[in-house]
Amino acid sequence: MTNIQQIMQMGQQLQARISEMQENLETEELSATAGGGMVTATVDGKGTVRSLRIDPSVVDSEDVEMLEDLVLAAVVEAQKKARDYMEGEMKKATGGLPLGGMSLPGLF
Image (cartoon, rainbow, N blue to C red; front, top):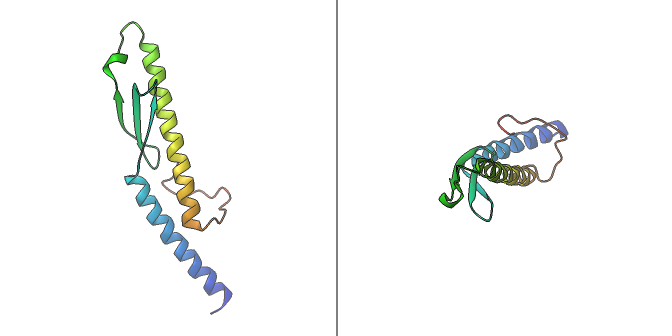
């Protein structure tokens, strides 16, 4: 087998692993909380918000800004977890091979 054939075969294997990883990202759920658990945001492995839970004790019509801050903090942290998870999965799929800013469809 020539070097070009080996490289093409490795590329096809890498593409298959990345495709599988992208499918897994859609089913993975990651959660983060804010305000000591008063707000919980859950995202999929790509960072798309899937659910938001707010403890009723936090709802105060006099202090909507606090609730907005808690929701934002929980969503941002959950999305960070998704990015970290996706990066870890990408390293596994590529065997640690750096892709140097390569854009992959469907990922962030």
